[in-house]
Length: 414
Image 1 (cartoon, rainbow, N blue to C red):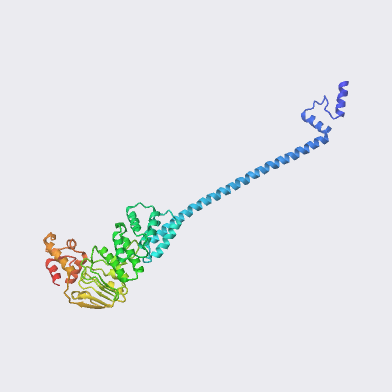
Image 2: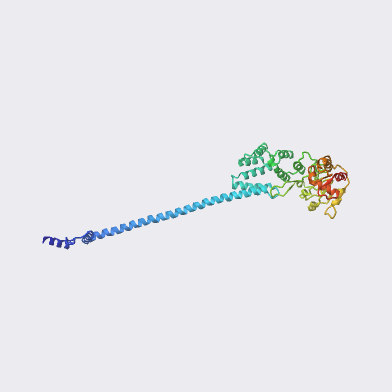
C-alpha cells in the first residue's frame, strides 16, 4: 500500500513511477516538464551555440575556399609572368639576332652610321650577345673610333686570336681624333688579320665619305686595288682636278671590284674617285662589269686589254668615248651609245706578249698528244680562260678553245 502511495506522489510531482520502468529519454522528458523554464533556457542556449559554431565553421570553409581561389589566381599570374618573361627573352634574342644580321648585310651601301645605330639597339636589347658586341667593335674600328672599338671587343669576351689582334691594333691608336692619315690607314688595312681582310672594302667606303681630299682618298683606293690583284706597287696616277685616273701598263691588273659578301652587291672600288676619265690600256682587264658603278665616267681607254664585250658599258649614261686597239674593230659592229675611237699605237703590249711568250715556251711540254694544238684545259694551265677567248676573237675563229702553234704566233703579230 505504501509503495502505491509513493508512485502516486511521484506521478503528481512529475516523476516517473516504479510501474513505468521509465528509460533515459522518459526521465529526461519528465525532467524538462518539471523544469520548463530552465530547460527552455538551456535549449535556447544550445541552439544559439550551435548556430554560432556552425557559422564559425562555415566562415572557416569560405575563407579556405577564398584562400585556395586566391592562391590559384596568384599561381596562374606567376605562371603567366614567367611565360611572358620567357617569351620576352625569346623575342629580344630573336630581334637582336635580326639586328645583328641586318648589320652584317648593311644593304644601304656600307652606311656605317645606320649600322652603328642598329647594332647599338641590339646590344641594348641583349647585352649578353657576343656577336652584337663584336659587330659594334668592328664598326667602331672601321670608323677609326679605336677606344670605342676596344671597349666593345672587350665586352664581347671573345678569345679568338684575330679578335685579340684587332683589340691590340685599336689600343695602339688610342687618343686618335678623326681619320688616320691616308698612309696610316693603308698601314692599318695591311695589318688586318686574314679573317678580317673583307673589312678593307668597308674602310674604303667609309674613307670616301669622310675624307675631304679625293687625292688623299686615292691612296686608300690604290692599296685596295693592289690587294685585290695580288700586287704591291701599281702604276697609279690620279688627277683630282680632272677626275682622271691612269692604270695603264699594269700587266697584273685584272680585278676592279671586290668580292660580294652574303647578299651584298659587288663593291666597285673605283666608284669612290668619281672618275670622268679612266685609262686601263695594257692591263689584263677583261670584265667590264666591274665598271658599272662609274656613273660619271665620260672617257675610257681599253687599248691592248683582254676586253671582248663592250655591252656592260651601255649602262654608263655619261660615257661619251671609248678607245680600242684597231684589231678589235670586228668586235664592235653595230650602233653604240658612245663614240668608239681606234688607236694604232704600238706601245707596250706586255700583257698579251707575256702570255703568248709563256705559251710558246711551254707549248711542246703541254701538247701531250702532239697534235700541234692546245685545248682550253691545256692553255688554262698557263693563261686565264679570258685570254684564250681573246686570242680566238682576235683571229676571228671559233675552235672551242683550241689553238694551234701558228695561230698563237699570228696573235702575237696582230
